[in-house]
Length: 219
View 1 (cartoon, rainbow, N blue to C red):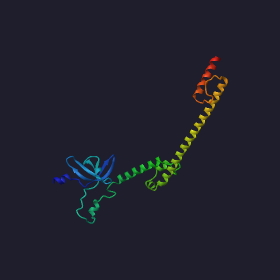
View 2: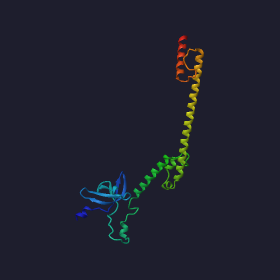
View 3: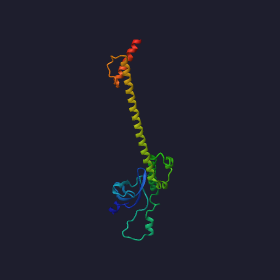
View 4: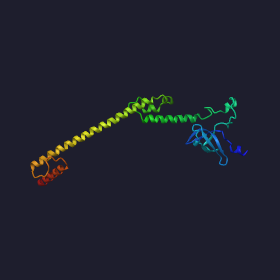
């Protein structure tokens, strides 16, 4: 009939390619006019993740024969067992790839936050198996990271305090030297119009003027 024709393929198990990766799903709608099937993904069953694919396109491949919907509860039969998807008939390769992608992301995070004093280096983390990642002491890892971060911040603060103190000491010494220069200049010429306690840039200007005058007189 026209209705059965329009629903051809609904219930079929397929694999669909999204962003170069294959994901298992089930055909939920058929569009004969455009030659497309709508696929609901096993790992993302919400309707918003459903996608349309060309029936004969390279992004779609069949997994098993069309599943017959159950009309009433019944005990499993040999036919049901043959049609029921298993770990070997679904997508072990896709599941393995997803697990490896997650593991790689985990390894990247561990390498990025690796504390300086941690018991493993980046190469050792890169070589960790899935089981080793599952058993990884994450709480202890981030305790080490936070302690290292606090030490680093404390060192920066200490260094900034030391630099500020050095700067203040230098300013104090410069002011003292300028006052001595003022007293020296006024002892040689009382006509200099400058405060004996002056310690600013005016002292530098007066000293430069005296040097120019002395140089011109000797040349």
